[in-house]
Image: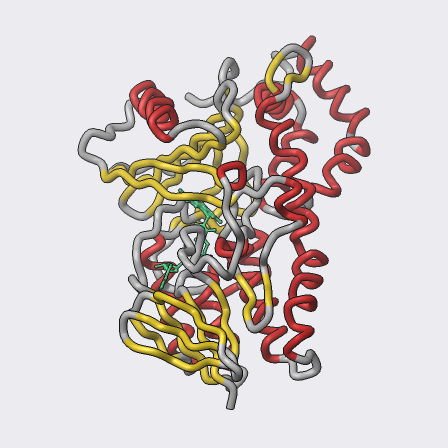
Length: 393
Ligand SMILES: Cc1cc2nc3c(=O)[nH]c(=O)nc-3n(C[C@H](O)[C@H](O)[C@H](O)COP(=O)(O)OP(=O)(O)OC[C@H]3O[C@@H](n4cnc5c(N)ncnc54)[C@H](O)[C@@H]3O)c2cc1C
């Protein structure tokens, strides 16, 4: 029977291992930390739990959030009701659940750091801190800080977003999203069970500057950070050209989740793509109809068809969305203003938030609604009292 080594036991690795083990393959997962509180918002969109219901139907602690306030520099906040709530987990709980599912399916879970991958005639020799293992095939799931140089996405500064933040022992029931002038990224406040995950992600700005922006925001909002635990991490954010040359698969290996750069370049959503890519990769490994030499090509094609083409399109929008001007204001500021004035526009943003509107369909959806949206905006502008806008108290 074939032996598959899964390198990394985060959401992508754990889910791939579950699928592979359930199909009867001898599967070994290596993770240097196993379940841990990875720096993350922990938000799971409707798109993710609708397709993978176990992400919501379980008894581990989680917060279902049905209200978000979206703001940009120079605008008030717009309140957005989420008819399809965002589900928010602590990453320790989420990772533990996924690893336990993999173990129950029959995967062997090893706490060890993978040091080296050596190609052999039969497959791979995986050298870890716990010893050496011979494997026929490898799933690379080592996240954005993948130290194995020969496999997975090749990183450069323009393809990552720096993120940092605090876990604050406080409670709130809604999400905050704040866009800032001149920042290709945003600040978020995500309520979790027992604490808030407050963070900032930004491209092309030094971490110290991002931290100053975040702490200014927290001071203004009265969110204490002095005794809160600080975190920092990298988030893949591939440029359009990087999507085309992305090293996501090769002879004897497929990369899943962050190790393959599979993250939404605008929202930073990565958990869905970690699970989805793990699902697709395990299908390709399991399916004997694909010869080993065909597997990388098959996986790349499946990814493109399933979501990567849309994320590449999103990468083309990202800079324009965060940094361009529209009618003398920043695009995020105009977006918030339109959200406040037009229920139709608000529902478009809500669909983007839920993950049910692909970027490639955005233009068509906006054009289809253009007349109604403009009418609502003009109506609201002239008859503000008749269409009250909702702002943060
Ligand atoms: C600050 C921040 C906020 C985010 N918020 C959200 C959010 O709210 N919603 C969302 O959908 N996404 C969010 N993301 C993205 C999300 O966290 C990632 O996309 C997701 O964790 C990817 O899962 P993964 O399994 O590919 O990688 P990871 O979760 O990074 O897992 C990789 C695993 O590999 C292990 N590993 C690495 N190297 C080795 C090695 N050599 N040997 C053994 N083990 C190794 C690590 O210990 C780790 O457990 C956020 C990311 C950041 C940084």
